[in-house]
Length: 125
Image (cartoon, rainbow, N blue to C red):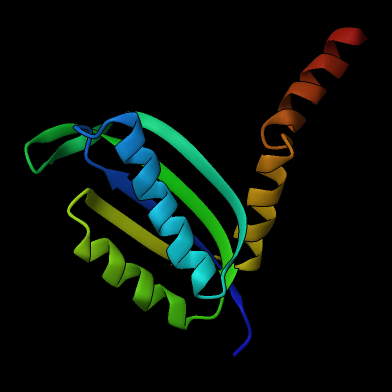
């Protein structure tokens, strides 16, 4: 089975220490790599306010992984999320070619630059 591009975001409970949070992130990184995933990008989004209360909590630590892997990994990853009480929410999505392109441009700092460049060109006249 050929690999597809995926993006997974999970929210950790805010009561964790920095060491516990790092341990949880390392655990899920290991789940991905042990099952043949190639990590493309990871981003710690930090502590953010939740849109609504989850398990009596208003904030959570957000973590994102973008990876390339066979489709069978998603089920294993979701099972690990459900077994871990530190995870309060998670979402894994398959990325189409447009999303992959957008993420690549975003990592390279090109998202939102076109508008600024045209504004700067207009000021130079």
